[in-house]
Image (tube, rainbow, N blue to C red; front, side, top):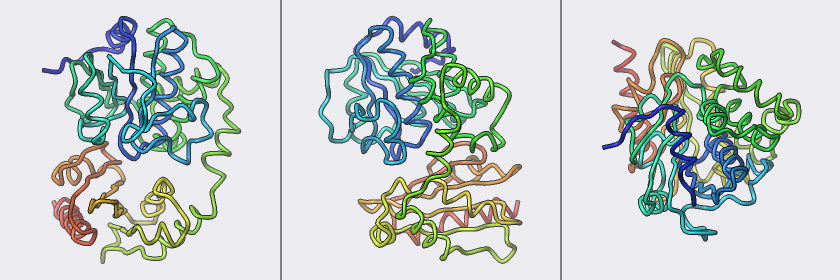
Length: 328
C-alpha cells in the first residue's frame, strides 16, 4: 500500500537515502525533464549519488538544459551505478514509466513519487501529489528548500523551464499565485527568463515548422465547431524531417480556434500505439470525461490516453466519447 506524504516528509525521505534514480514519464515534456534535472542538481549539492532516467533519453527541445548530456535513457542506456532509491517525477501512473523505467524502478529498494496530476492514485511506497500545482517543478522548489538546499542557477534554470512549460508560460488556467512565487524564486536564483523564453517559445527548427504546417493543414472541426482534431503520423515526421518531440505545442493551435472547447491531436507511435493528446477549455474536464474512460489520465484541461489500435480507430473512439460528454 502506497502512503501519501507531505512535501516535508518527502524531503526527509530523500535526505535519508542515496544512490537515487529520478524517473520521468514516456515522451518526456518540459516539466518531466526540467524537474528531474533540477532535483538532480540539488541531490548532487548534498553529496548524494544520483542520476536522471528518461524514456528515450533527453528530448531534442531540452538539450540546451544544464545536465542534459548526463541523462540516461531508461529504455536502453547504461547506468552509471546501481540505484537503490527510485523517485518518479511528474509520472501520473506506473505504466507511464515505460517498460525499461518500470523494470529499473521495481529493482530499487526504496520507491517514491512526486507529481501534480489529479488522476495519480499513488504507486511505490510513498507519494506526494498536489493536483493544484501547475507543475511538478513548482512542487520541487519547495522540496529542495525543505531539504535545506539553496537554489543555484543550474537548479533554477531547470525548474523554471519545468514550471513555465506546464502552465503555458503562465497563461493557462492552472497558473496560481504559488506558481508565480516558485518561478520568482528561480529568477532570484539566476534563471535567465529572456534567454529561456527565446529558446523555448521563439525558436523553432525547420522540421518542427514544416510539421506544424502539415498537421494543421489536415485539421477538422465538428459541425457545431466545438471540437477540433488533427492527425500526426510517422510518415509526416519523416517527410518533414522532424522528430517525435516536435509535436509539443501543436495541439494548442487547435484549441485556440474561436468556438473550440475540446481539441484532439491523434499521434501515431511506434509498435502500433495510438496516442490521443487532449486539451479543453473550462469548464470541460477532459481528464475525467474523456481520458479516464479511455484508460488514460491527466489534468482537467490537459490529458491523454493511449490505445494499441490503428490511429483512425482510436481517433473515432475518442471523438465518440467527447461527443457523449458534450451532449450531457
